[in-house]
Image (cartoon, rainbow, N blue to C red; front, side, top):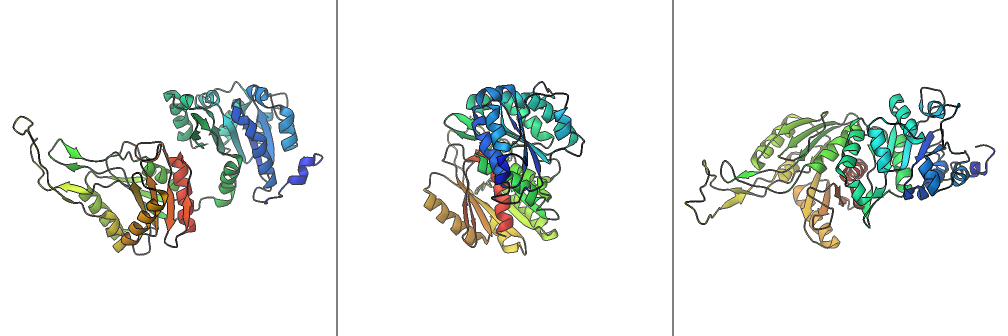
Length: 414
């Protein structure tokens, strides 16, 4: 790189990545057109970029462009130089991180199943075996992304600790995040580290149910996905995590301690007991707790033969959030608020009122009336507000990404 004009831009933005060697792999998605911009950004933050291109990627952008962008000829095949070992194996020249930007459905499938018949997948196999941090950024047509086996492949890849930065869904396509967002993620990885090490976190997640009779219940559509994402990301950042979990459809991370509950009163009692006997640094009230409880729960199944009409009277359920707000001591309390079809101004105003009433320190609110935002969806779009009226608005992102942004917001605004 020293003899190439690219040296003129090294660390011109920051030295956050100075001394870091990052392998940037490019596969045959049209998103490859953004890869040179990402490479230049990483260099401007101080990184040395080792480019790797699949044969399909070379049909979309010319290797000369990547050579210009990085100052290094891209690796397009494995030769006698055993490039995959040199940069991703157990050598003194191995990289500090490897990213695949963009990753096609084909590449995801091969990595998930241990196939390495392209230069990119051979690098991936070597990096995974060596334990080099790997970040994968998929890009493809949306129906391809929705294929159940593609989803399963992403799940398999994540299960071994690989970060998959899930795409933004726009115009019927699963688009890769822009280069600035990815460069910020990489800088966070190297500069933020395990920012929650030594911290203890309590999360309520999922939905509660209220029984009408032994078979029928009143409930809502919460899946537990958002709570799971927060638990997962908090664990990745070094926290000790406990979850009081209602009847969601998601499995919580195995490293989290989970207390299962069903009704709002059971969740109230479990949380009250935990905060009485433990000290938590952060408490996230993510669960969608039912607001109403049937006054007269039937001990037997209500027959439809003898009842042409059924009238049920309800009483308000106990407010878990308010109870925590009264008893949180030194804990930072993060409330969640779901509304439906409100203007952004009304959404923020409503959230601030609820935050003040609950004595919470931060509130995360979303409009479930927006497509892709809220219950059961894989994505969400939220607004975070602190007591000091710091406001952060996310884009429509995967719930894992929303959780990551929320945890960073919380640690900066506690």
